[in-house]
Image (cartoon, rainbow, N blue to C red; front, top):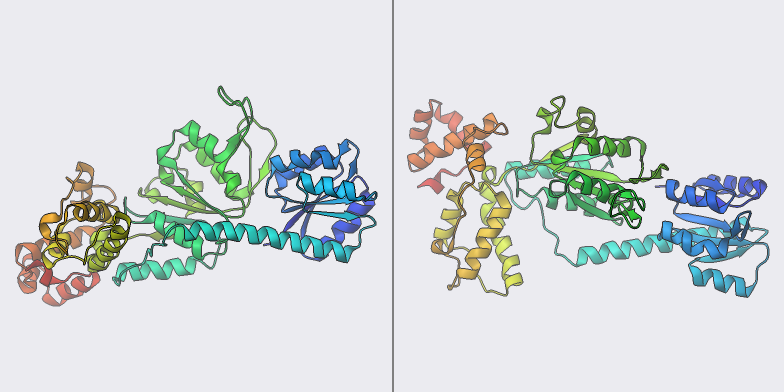
Amino acid sequence: MKSRILLVDDDPAIRFSVGDFLETRGYEVDQAGSLEEARVQLVQGRPDAMLLDHQLPDGGAVEAIEDLLQLDPAVVIVMLTAHGTIDLAVEAIKRGAQQFLTKPIELGALEEVLSRCLDNRRLRRKQVAAEDRKSRRDIDPFLGDSAAIRQLREEAMRALATESPVLIQGETGSGKGVLARWLHAHGQRQDEPFVDVNCAGLSRELLDSELFGHARGAFTGAVSEKEGLLEHAHQGVLFLDEIGDMAMPIQGKVLKVLEEKRFRRLGEVRERRVDLQLIAATLRDLAGHPGDGKFRPDLYYRISTIPLRVPPLRQRRGDLELLANDLLERLSGELKRSCSGLSPAALERLQRHSWPGNIRELRNVLERALLRCEEEALGADDLRFDPVPAAAEETLAGGAPGGTLEEMEERQIRQALDDLQGHVAHAAERLGIPRSTMYVKLKEYDIDPGRYR
């Protein structure tokens, strides 16, 4: 990723010579001839560093440093002056400049200073990202050995090779957010910010303000300007969870960001530049919505460049024991409780549950059981399941629009095995399929008939 430099000098000859030199060294260069132009370019162009001349037509640059850093606290400022004094250099550094160079500019020295300052900036960002990762134990979104989870891992690994938008689909509690964080932690922007926004938890007005920010006086109660989360995600990853619940007017603004890398704060007319990768997630089937007025077709096709589907827990029951033990280990540490694992009876009961809330529900059930358990291992009697919501019952029964033919087929096979105590031949006869086909289906859906005996 090329670094962007803003060159601020009122001498066109200097802007031309220095700008041309920097471009030959692989930098992207914006130019400004005054402080006012610099402010506009700083907001719109989001440079990584600014070469700032000391004397400009509309004021002294040293006095403006703090104002410029308020517009973008992360920008590196290198002062340039033909009248270098120690006092001036000290004042510039005190106000926030990183370096101070005198004219005439020695281009080799300038390149070395810029390179060192930008390396330090990247190092600081890496340290912040590393501290954030260290503060939490990473969760493996691919824990297990089922065919469904192996396929997801393969597709996710391919997604790391690009910075195109990623659309993660899956039921509630299946681990979409965990997968999004994994993609960031292992992707090309792993040392840059990860900004997480839940579109379902905010009203249209609040989501608009949170994403794009607002100018002072943009609406009643906007007593000061606000930086939006898009700006926080600059050069990093923006994760829009439950994007299917986003209001149509905001969808159009997000599409503009993806296509033009520009946006406006509420109440402002000037555009701001932003560079980010988008990861979106939804439990809705957005492919069925384009054109029906609920989700913009153009935005859907833009965000679904790389589609990833997280399988529900009921499609990976072979992974359930491994998942449960991993969660128990985490919960034991968090709750400071001792637990050796699951008893056979507890595991059997977990295997029979439908898991409408997926891994999130599994965690809740285990946390509740761990608090109740008085034995070394969790027993079946320690497990308490929440009532299945009507909407989830519909989905599990195949009545919801999101139910697929494969899911309905799997449910029929499991039900037949359950009714016939796991007898494969009798279940195949009831379902009207050859025994050989039945065994193929058992492997496809990762079903062990022995669990139903």
